[in-house]
Length: 428
Image 1 (tube, rainbow, N blue to C red):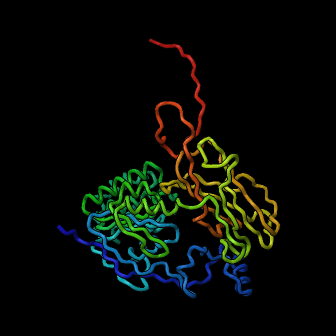
Image 2 (cartoon, rainbow, N blue to C red):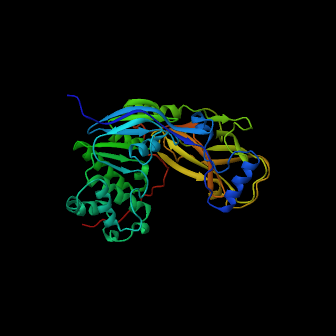
Image 3 (spheres, rainbow, N blue to C red):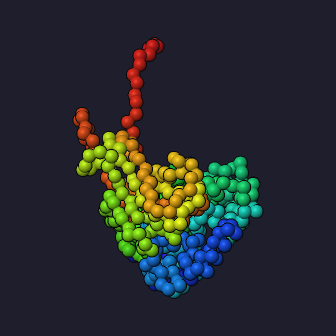
């Protein structure tokens, strides 16, 4: 029997006019003004080289010609790299912003949880915001009152429910936001990456609730970078890239292809110094590489290695103004760990003009076997000025084994920890 279609998106596009973003300080505003006066790119712009295919003249297409349908009771996952257009799509579906072209047809009440505190009035208490959200969904006060105790219990913030939301932490806002979205019975739930703010126990509770919601005939759109959650929750997945749909299909097939696309990277990438290299007028990357400490061939579990980042400083950078960081993701696109130069070396020496290399050493007997990829972040004056996703990848191979078990051990990390055996007095 044909399922009822509750979301139909046809030729949806969203275009933004490129302009100057506001600075956090007067100094940043003056810096942006001086750059414009010299005819140089805006230093406050967060656009990176990977987003350029979406730029046409003075406009940026966050979405272009998106079409898909979602059936009643379906959990549809939306995946893609940062800047792919996922959040823009959800904002259009939630009617937070309007499309440039195309149409969106949705049947039923929609509840959205896109950013921490979405839909909350910070001056009202948590209890008052529950009633406010219910009223926005078109529910009567008696309906909301009937579910009030369940919402408060699920959120786990009973002791703060009568405090103003502006005093809540980000985790508390997410807990209350999801509890409201799940229990006020919207026909369509739209959930962005905000669940990553909650702790592991709350995330498991949310995933279980979303499964129950779909089982009751309601529809869920779920955006996440956590492929384990997507695989366990979604029946179908949309893969987005550069504002367009790259593939739609069975979850396992699409996720596998998505992950493989970013683990087939080389162990070294170089850029010719110039405007096409990732960066800004102050600093540009020239090379990222996986470097062996000793020997050749594949990296095994016992071996140490390093990740080198070469960059060029044009005019010299005052002391403490620059930082370079790395994020390491595994084959499930889970962030394994992050590290930055200033965490290790807080000295605030100025950086002279010219070429420089930073190298992060990864000790042996730490990461489990498997595939990993590296994302590079560059910060200026405590603010990230650009990131480069597609840099390098590496694989950790199994070391020589003894014993009967030769399969892959479980877990992200596999440190070699010390164990001690000692005799103790036995008691009857």
